[in-house]
Amino acid sequence: MELKQIESFVRVAELGSFTKAALALNLPQPLLSRHVRQLEVELHQNLLMRNGRGVTVTEAGLVMLEHGRGILHQVAVAQEELGSVRGALAGRVSIGLPPSLSKLVTVPLTMAFRQALPHAQLSLTEGFSVLMVESLRAGRLDMAVLYNPPASPDLDMTVLHEDALILIAGKKKPSTPSASTLKAVMPLADLAKLPLIVPSRPNAFRLLIDTEMQRIQCKPNIALEIDGLNAILELVKEGLGYAVLPAYTLRNFANPQDFSTHRIERPKLRSQLMLVWSGRRPMTATHQAAMQLMQEVVTTAQLSQD
Image (cartoon, rainbow, N blue to C red; front, side, top):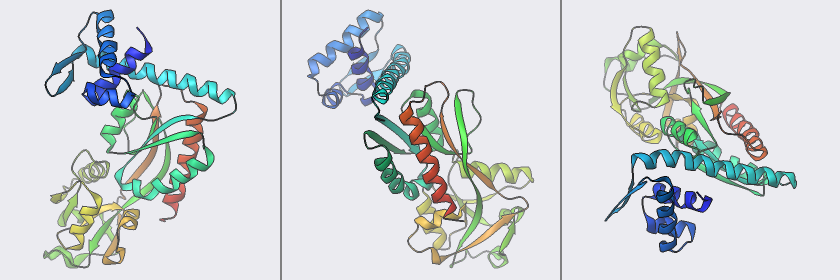
């Protein structure tokens, strides 16, 4: 089993196409096909099912894909560590960011990364928590910023910041009796009377709202489920409901003055922002430096909203 065979298989499996994988690896397609076939012969397993539209991964292929990604990751780690012996922090660092935070930190993080780690390559991915946890376990991400991730034996994490979710209303109010009862500070139970526009499960903010309201024996009044924070705020602005989000999300919106904000108390909705990485994969010096940068940039961005 050779490294080039594993790399060829992993890329074909991820892209679902020999043609796309050949272009990505800059290899002739017949050579790429030979690498994958040699790997299948050595393993005595069919790893891919060929069809007219590309390829699909077999059950054995899924097992090999997981191991193959790990092997390639370990090789990359070895190359980075050997590079660090020469005094240069190099290699690739892949970081996942939630959509609510991406616009806030992408530019400052990229600039800080270029300045502190000029020989390293940064890859930023925006996604929801469930998908990013899967990518961390599969080795597609080195680290990710997640809201309220559940404890897991294969993931390590540290708190970056705690946010209080607030009630956000537009200047146009929904035509409901409760619209006239908004106060600067709202008990959580009062949110059950308001039509809420929220992300769908398993969004971290949605899970927090559902869990905390259930804890006080209330049920949120879900008017609309929208996966997109700016889209939620646009609908709130038009008076179709209310949002429950961190205050900093308004900084991503063009006209934050179009909204009023109301603190939520008894109890507060506290959301923890965590930096998460795989506990089963070694962290290189480059990864550790990137983690430190991530903590500094996110903390600065969050504190600027308080």
